[in-house]
Length: 594
Image (tube, rainbow, N blue to C red; front, side, top):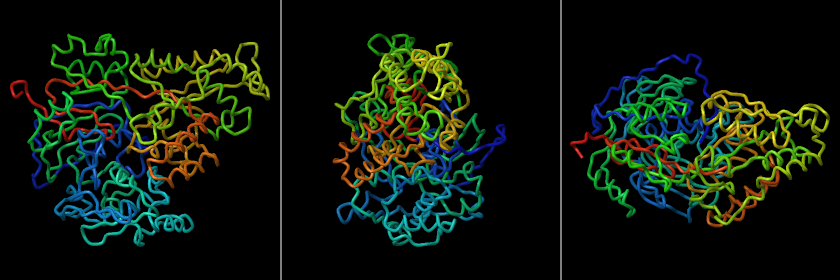
């Protein structure tokens, strides 16, 4: 999940939101959770951003019809604002949801002093915002050509320049105040997972009309938390929504010792318990580690540099950490990391044989095993295909055709006329200097990553120039196809390979397709895959992976093993394979309460 960029021109601006309300929430104001983001958010209008950190906040503000069971493995959908799982008709082509009455948006000036109940039309409107071409919603690809009548309205908007929000769409309509029906162009049993993604949370039309281009800084939802203070790129403060209906912590253990302890600690509690969530943006690894050590953070991922201090040779928590009551939760992410090359860039882009050879050589120069050993401290596994383990469509036996081979990379460059100059660095076939311009971020890990890339590129005679910026600005440049090379990661938004393969689908350029890649072969495979039931898509995903290897668009790297450290006062913690926010499921207790 990443983002188109929302620019905040005054970084010191503090936006404060004072909750009014009706005091339903069981949350306790004195229970404050302190967490850190390792990169800045991008505002909280999830239609216009797919920034991972923005999504973490949005997940507890905007509610979807469905959500994930906190403990179930394999993952399982459960009702959120819906009364129950949907009624499914026509073999998965029609889905009907009943919304729980009595759910209200948080009080906001947009509602002019009136309580505003959540109704079916709010979800219809939210879908229309995703469809509106002017919003460039990255999540449009999730529903492109899937909802009856939707694409016709999109096409009309492209012709006229205006999306008609009052027009009826046959495939998404409110049957009454609390009932919404989706009719798909073909059966799709994966569709409910899409509706559980954060962009599909309910937004009130009055709020969008009221805040207009300031909407990203004024999220108004029905979820357990609401934005209280916001210092862009520095701090985010959430407080419990006083009008939230709450729920009882009653999740079932999967049988693991960890789950059993969670059930023992948490069962029967009225949730949420946390009254405030303080989020600090701490981009430097060492600073985050020091913040956790000094108990300024309640949990955090172990930074790479701290792994030798925390884990023993068997990847278990060292005794000195255990004596402090700190706990370790390790999980393999449902993700891939990669370096991307801009296919529209005049130096590395294009489909001529010499350009393909250049990208292939760059890919073969990168030593992934060394990267995992040095930067990840062994806490990762090599990524082989576009679809990671744990996601439908992954083949555990698939192996990439592109491996570390600097000798062959040098021969390939020699063959296609990338000759070395007196300084040992190569020129383009036309004799002009070849310089690979790589966007990166500040921080120790980014510096080490750049150093490894430089070492690998030096070995094949390619000069590298590293442009240091921040994550949000690099994301903006990538979305606009204004870069040469950058590295990223994609964590599953829902457990289907479509969520990963759509990142390189041609029509998604300007949305999620940050390589600006357009390939008729790849696009045809993607379209064919979408015509299949999810359990029949793996062969198409394999072929798409081969096409990417052939074109040299992405350089797949790894899937990380995240080691979470949790302070002794925190109860209920577990990292979910899909959900990235668990604040509403946690409690903070003093030692004598345990």
